[in-house]
Length: 140
Image 1 (cartoon, rainbow, N blue to C red):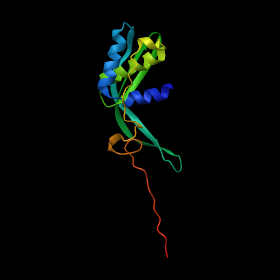
Image 2 (image 1 turned 30 degrees about the vertical axis):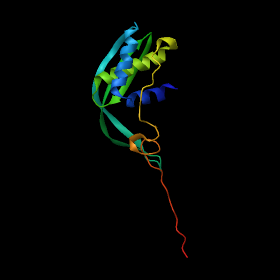
Image 3 (image 1 turned 90 degrees about the vertical axis):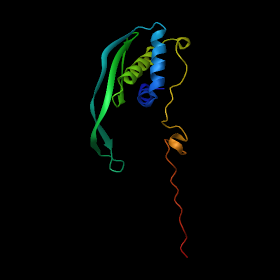
Image 4 (image 1 turned 180 degrees about the vertical axis):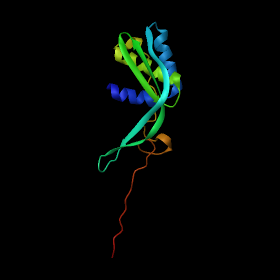
């Protein structure tokens, strides 16, 4: 898994699981240094129009970010909303993964996220999206 994909999953992961896993990383004696404490602020959401591929500003959204150093690796995380503990936990987990510590010391449990899970949000397909069905009638 590349870092971009890992950060996207950490940004959407369940808060309680993030905090539990980050606590487990710290509890096994890992040295974590907080470089930038969790900060809440606004970031501008930008989207790309799919047909003409033009970018435009959608608006400002509330986000929280944190930065840590773990085993010589500086990592940060950003999550939507104002949950400081979850943002800090996500930064710790990103740094843990980036550090390359031996797998036997890491908690092997996966962090649950509904992103891309079949049947998520109560429907089939990705993220609860239902497949589009187009049926044509013959004109006689």
